[in-house]
Structure formats: structure tokens, C-alpha cells
Length: 590
Image 1 (tube, rainbow, N blue to C red):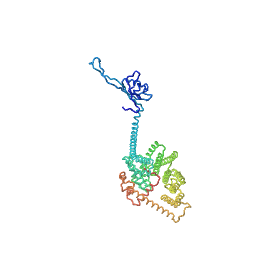
Image 2: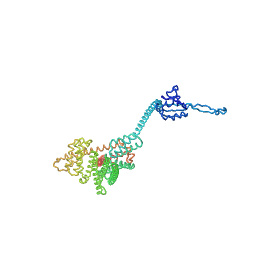
Image 3: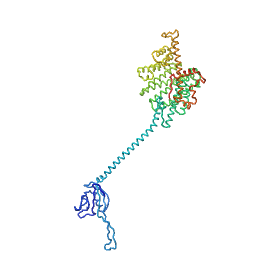
């Protein structure tokens, strides 16, 4: 048996001699030195005594004891046995013998803890090195596997979540009524991921194009197309149970009914789009009621969830716009309604609700520290002014409509903005352009509300003299006002026109502007018709969603049910465009 470095062997006799010596083999001991007791060689503690006794008794075992020389010692001992035979009866050889086992010596191997540990040190180092290498290799494999899993999961997750997040961003903008050109691009240039997301994208793009197409038809004067597309869209949204889309389509249908009514009144027609005036009024009332009802329900839910947030106030503003749209509709159509007094009462009530909501929105924005979009706010108030002036034109009292307060507010906002040439209000339209648009409304205000043609003419002449470029509609309004002034005024400052040259020149300019306007309507309509099947992708939409409209009849439709001459058709279209582009009602995009 190989012992560790520092290990040794002892062998003792079962019994001690008369001097107590029992050692045969021991550390640093030789028989030539004379007898010695094993305790004298090992100098053990008391734990060695029972071990020594077991050895002398011929027992075997393993144990531990402490030595003053070798510290802790591990001992393994066993007896050295000799087999012999003893006669059973020494006087009678025939009685036989019996086998005996005599313990001659007791042998033990001793190793210290340090020696045993030292013998395993090399194995421990090798094992540690091997384990470290294995851990390194496994760690590298685990790291590579984790990175590979993360990469694959990232790619898979990205391919699924990016379209969803992109769609969520578009939907949030739609919910806030703030869809932009970027949102349109996201819908149009979408690259699919999974079937479910693809289906949602296609549905959203289709719904957006439906409303966009209807609005394009509306502002191009093709009211019949706008009405039919919006009506069929409303049916589709109702089947989809999309309440927001239902409300928007209903609002736009209400505005379409208002514009159809105005066009009928302006052209003297008794029927349009297959509807009489009474039917137009009834449908418009129902559309606006449905739109406002759904808007109020959504607003209440929105407010309960978020309180006075920016999104909530934006939603409130669109609800106020719907009230204003309905107020203009009620007050415009009251003369042909069944109960004129009640209709006018409802109209003035909606105007008051609109005014209260407009003030509340501004107050809450200031109180909560929200930024007010000055451009949107200014355009909104200009729309309010246009709507109120349209009512004044119908004979309603300016004092009852508080039109002067509205104009003063708009004028003051523009005046303050003009102190800063880099104001956001002038990024798309210059200060002169903004002033021209306001002057156009001031001309109406002085001439219709104040019956003051002199001041109306002063406003009109300003833009024609001072501004290098003038908007065509503003120029036409200004020249018509000057013509009215020349023909009706008794102002001593009015230039004399004994030969009628000034009147002829103004009349000729008006005819030119009106002719140019008709030509621009024809060009825009031609462009609109040419884009329905190519650029906007609405050709297939007409077939699948609007079965009542054939491909050919969008551009070649006779409005009154009989074929019209091109000039008559252009005049009717230009009349419809003028009514649809008044700018006093809000057509919602989505």
C-alpha cells in the first residue's frame, strides 16, 4: 500500500513485555534501539487509548486522533493473524485437533490530514482547470445561444410589433382628430407582417380613403358623389360598429345636406340628389343628431378616463364644431322647416353651447398649461365668423349673434401676431394673405351687418392698392363691393363716373374673375375624375362598397336627371363649389 508523503506504518504486539514495550515498527524506530511503547513514539492524546486497545484485541477499523508531533492523524489498523491447530486432547492423539487464529501483530497505516490533502492537490488543480475550461466553453455556448435566441425573438417581435405600434400611432391620431400626411403614408406604404395586422391595415386604409374621397368630392362641388359615398360609408361603418367613424360620417353627411340645401336655394332648384328641400332638412337633422349624440357619449367616456387632458380638450373642440355645424344648419334651413320658431330656437341654443365650449377649452388649456395651436385656433375662429356672417346674410340680427365680438377677437389675434413676423400663423400664409382673408369677412360685416358701404369700400380698396398679390375670392369680393359702392353711395369722396367707365371696368373685371373661377372648377373636377381610379385607388372601392355608382357616371352625371349643356353644368358645379367652400362648417377627415 502506497502512503502519502509523510505517512508511516506502525506494528505492535498484542501484549506488552514486562517493561510495557509493544512496538515492532514505528516512526523513527528500530529494534536495535531496544523496546519502546508505541505511545512514546506517537505522543498521542487520550483518543488514542481506545484505538490501541482495539488493536491489541485484534480488531480492525479506521479512526482519528491527535498527536503533539503529527497533529491530526488518520489511522487504519488491522490484525496480523496466524492460523494454527491445537489438539483437543494432548493425551489422546485420536481425539483430533481444532483450528485456532492467533493474533501475532497489529498493523496500522497512519497519514496526517496535510499529507492526504497534499496528495490530492494535483488532482484538485487539474480538476479545477478542467472545470474552468468546461465552464468557459459552456458559458460561451450559453451566451451565443442566448444572443441567437434574443436576435431571433427580436426579429420576430419587431416584425409583429412595429406594424402594430405604427397602426396604434395612426389610430391615436385619428382618435384625436389629428391625422397627418405621415399617417396617410404609413397606411399607404405599409409592408405586412401577419394576416391579422394586414387585415386591420387594409381596413383602416379603406375607411380612410372612403372619407377622404367623399371630402374631395364635396369640396370639388360634386355633392351627389359626396352624398352617395358618405351614405354608403355610413352603412359600412354601422355594420362594423365603428362608433367614431359613424359619428364622423354622420357629421359630414349633415354638412353635405346643408350644402345641398344652400345650392338648391342659390340655383332655385326644388330637387337635388333625388331629395326635396324637406327631405334634405329631415336627413340633415337626423345626421347631426346622431353625430352629436355619439360624440357626447365618447366625450363623457374620454373625460371619465383621462380628465382634462390635451386629448380630451381636442375631442371637446371637435364636439363644439359639430354643435356649430348643426346651429348653422338649423338657422339656414329654418325658413323651410315645419316649425320655424322651434328650429331657430334650437339653432341659437347650439350657438350658445358652441360659444361656451370654445371659452371652456381655452380656459382649461391656460389653466392646465397646455399649448394652444394658434394656427388651428385662428382658423377655427375665422370659420365661426364666416358662419355667423352667413346667418347675417339670411337676415338674422348681428347683435343677437354677437358677431362684432367675434370679429374683434379675430382682429386682435391677427394684430398681435403681426408684431412678430416669424409667428407660426404666417408660416404657410403671409401676414398680407391673412389680412386679406379677414378683410373679405370685414367687407361682408360692414355691408351686411352694419349697412355701411362706405367702410366696406375702404376695406376693399386697401387690399387692391396695398397688396402685391390678392386671393381671387378676396379680389372678386372687393371689386363687387366697390361696384356696389359706386352705384349706391352718396359719399362726396366717391369718384365721379359720369360716363360709366368705372362701372364698366369693374363689371368687366368681375366677369373675368367669374369666368376664371368656372374654368378652375372645370380643371379641378377633371383632375378629380382622373384620380378616382388611379391615384387614390378608389375605382375598386366604387365597385365593392358603392354599388349604386357606376364607373362612368361619376364624371358624366346630369344633376337634375336630364342631360345638361356643358355651360349649364359648369355653372351649376361652380355654384355648388362656392357653397361647399364657404369655410364656415367643419368637414372631419376621419
